[in-house]
Length: 387
Image 1 (cartoon, rainbow, N blue to C red):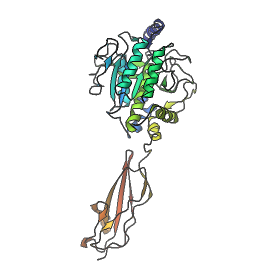
Image 2 (cartoon, rainbow, N blue to C red):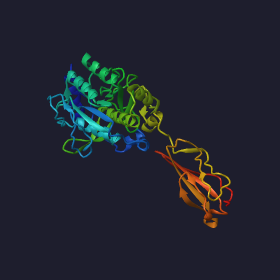
Image 3 (spheres, helix red, strand yellow):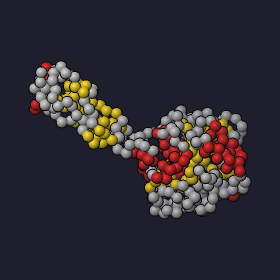
Image 4 (tube, one colour):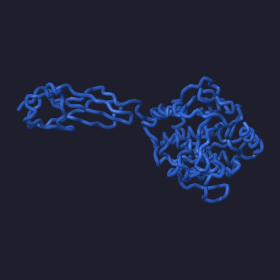
């Protein structure tokens, strides 16, 4: 609890400035977060793309941390005015680690706007947001905030959104339904914190102005290539949703903030306490399905067909039938071999019967595939092959 008290003091001292949106330390029931967000099924579709960049506007990132090595891009330090974005606090590294745990193939763009005490001025944060939008970010995570704001910050958020950047922000840790910025700006995805039972974390802000809720505790990367088992707060919840935005952008590179917001809202799981947020817990799998991903392995509605009366020396063309959700097909020709059953004679859409086929029946077997799996369907047998 001492950590929570210290952070509450920091928030109280930051009138006119923005402070860390982290909450109280607590237990981290490892593994429940992935299941709560339905990530294993979503990862069947995509684990992200190196072309999808999530900016972590925070205290910097330890780029060589084993959990992040090779995935952190060059960024900028607005606190010291240079390109050294190494983390001197740990918070930004933890946030980046959560983004990376959700979207393993996404890249992280570090933008340092908080100092070693986890405090930053609004103009500095606004400058960081604009820089991220201008330097390749498709998603911006803001695990920072305060009850009061300045016009500069609102303008920076509007600028990022106008450039098609998805902006995700922590809802705040005052345990209230009061406005919290930048999460309360129009167009921002605001994220509350919940526990492993789906209940709102006591520190989390809540209300209709909050968009969704996500896990509020996690084991996360920390400085010196270590980990912390008690990284808790809406600072934790926000990068889970930013990581989902990275997955969604990886699946659909044309995705814009409005389309993401609509798909996210349509694919949440309701919370037991609907006052926590306007929508429930994001479901990563349903989110990708809402954006056009297949929901299951291919389904055959019309089986494949082969010419009914094959003759030796005359080429045959298979028809794969009608499928729902197929992205590729594998076609095989098979010959009935009596007690040995059906044996494959050739792969491909065409086949010219040979002498060895005389007196035997043929069929076409099609295996359709997509990211969810494969389904196989066979045609009816032909009549016996004649010369």
